[in-house]
Each structure stands twice: as C-alpha cells, then as structure tokens.
Amino acid sequence: MVDASMRCLAANGFLNFRMRAMLVTFATFSLWQDWKAVADHLARLFLDFEPGIHYAQIQMQAGLTGYHTMRIFNPIVQGKSYDKEGVFIKKWLPELQYVPVPLLFEPWKMTSLEQRLYGCLLGIDYPKPIVDYEVTTRLAKEKYWQIRQHPDVQAKLPSVWRRHCIPKSIKDYENSHRL
Image (cartoon, rainbow, N blue to C red; front, top):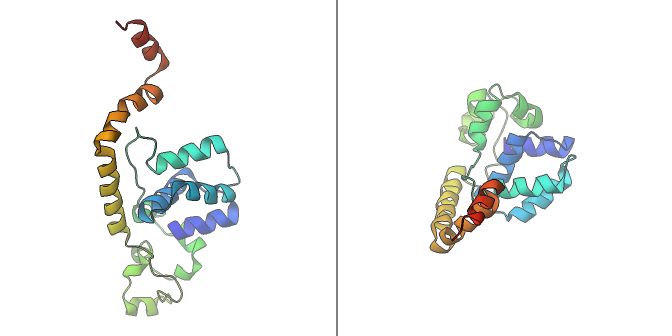
C-alpha cells in the first residue's frame, strides 16, 4: 500500500486522507524520518497543499501534538481492509499484477517458487522490504511511550491540554473563579 500510494500520489497529486496518514506514520514511525522532511516532500506532491491544514495533519499523524492517541496506520491492514480485491495495488504496482490477493498485501512472504510462478522476483521485479514493519513499529511504539511517560513530558501535558483542548468558555469560567 505504501508503494502504490506513493506512485498514485506522484502521478496524480492526490491521495485520500487515510492513505496520507498511512504514508506519514510509515515514514515517521517505521523509517524514523523527521516529520519536517516528510511534510516538505509530501507538500511538493499534493495538488491540494494548504499549509495551515497540511502541517497540522503531519504533526498529528507523527504523534507530535501531545494530546491525541498515537495512531499508526498499518499498510497491510489498510490494504486488506480498503483494497480487498487488490485493484488499487495492481493498478499502481503492475509488477504485482499476477500475484494473488492473499499474497498481494505481503508479497515479501512469497516463496521462491511462488515468485517464479507469479512472475515477480523480489529484489529484481519488485523490491524487497526496506524494513521489517512489525519490528520497526513495535520499537517506535516503545520509544514513543517512553518519551510520553517521561516526567518532564508528563509535567507539561496539563498546560498543553489547557491551551489546546479545553474550550474557551471553561477557561473563562476557571479564570473568573480563581482564588
């Protein structure tokens, strides 16, 4: 799904929100890319780029906003859930056109016999994975939660919540009733 989404985006300048979020979480959590580099690269590709929306969305998907639950969009799950028949993947990754749907979402799991049978040799016709998604995601979650649970971070959260999460009417009420 990551490769198909990037090819679609490069060709059309558009991608739906779910696939945009998946790309950002893959780049920042699985590849440990700086969110700013990811944001700048995607900004150059999106025809509907709008800075006020784009950068806030990238920061949220990269887990930087401080008050949202971390969401990491698993490309395998996204493919199985939203491209059940593999139409999107096969359109943008024609080198996988003969790979059957059960293997399409994880082509790196094909045996050498299956690769020959379906005309898709990994490392030749289609690249091998650059990371082990499950390992890198698990490590990213562990590191993220270590940071989020650090006492310095925990001490700052109430001020972030007051500033960004509590409605103005409640803030006004609290300010007017301080002793």
